[in-house]
Length: 582
Image (tube, rainbow, N blue to C red; front, side, top):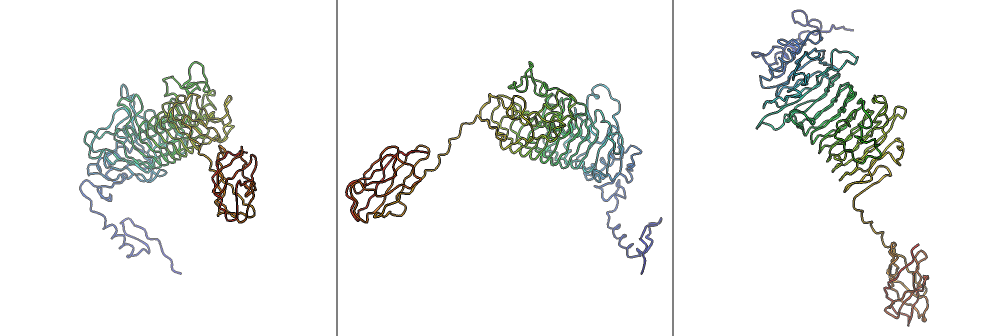
């Protein structure tokens, strides 16, 4: 049998082994097909618009031994100067230091995958004054307090990599103070070429930051984000839109869509933060989860209670400190016109979903084991939260359908309420929802809390619990029942034209006859009988027929004829009557 030695390259870049000249010829043709290097482009680059940061002239260090921030930034700047393209960060570990990496318009930073390319962020350099109040992103446009205003900031992005704090490895590292994994705060200015940045943010994993990902710029819109994963944040895991009190105003970053987001272990600091916080309209989430958000709060703050009242007594909180309600929540929805499909809040220390404002839709969502013991640091607040908490202002035109509230591990605790609706709400629809395993709270007949005073157009249906302030629907009248009239011998009926019709709700009805005599009948003889199932008349009834008259005695099913009834005579009659109902 013949043997072959695998072809390899020698020091002179010549093939050795049995790869022979044919293999070398193929390889040479492939190399020759690459575009020639242009001025300012590394010869190893595939094209001027696609560069590898580990190759000259950038020479990023994939071992993490030295800082690669400048190398990566230089590559981004160079590609941006040539009109845009892709900056590729191969598999490896890349140390980056403050001021981290600024993204540029039309430049996509791409790694080799979340498990292959790791960006290891180092702590911020010491800052004082106003700068100390600001937050920065490892990948960023602008900062938390200051937007990046640039009309060319279109179609930028980052994808397929992991961002971690301090060092690589399997151990969880302490979150970096003042540092976000990704921070977009973009403003295209007046009359931009496109009204939206349409940035790319896909398959990014962030560990150990103050906030995992924040998308807040006024023009950070029209994004479709796939596969975002955030773990172990000091505050929120994911923020969409500027929250109340932001120095640049509120909202921004509207009309973005998220698919398969997985946000866990947020709010390690125990402050007033949720796993996912949404402050802007027309945000859509599909098949996304916020879980294991930590909390350190009280029942009074969770429900905005005052004056020693309990969550059973309070109709609608007047306490202005609404921010405290999101402490440890899975989702905090302080926006309108948002849609959540197949999303989950699981094992969070606070509420599962907090719906602060109205005109939102939740379909097929699941709240599970809220106020979970391992994530709620305050013992008094364990087993006290709600899987779905709907604020009074959050009810208007909100639809919650086919959603589930569940208790999975009773030994670890869970929600006190499956669905909690504040008082005086209007235009709320909760339907086809269910609770699983949640015991009835003391003093309640079900784990559903709806205040006794509700506004207009409210409908709540969870399992067998139903409460509504909608105008009562007019009950559909049951169909009129008919019963056959059976002729006696000597009478023939015309098809099915002889019968009794009765309204089963009122007992009103009539007798209809269309018969022909085949023999003579004497005065008062029985000519037919109502079928056995037919009701009997309340009073004796009679009516004129085409020949003589017909009548039915009280409490009888016998139909009798008065007057001449000779052979060949046709008896036709319609006689109103009231019948007894059983």
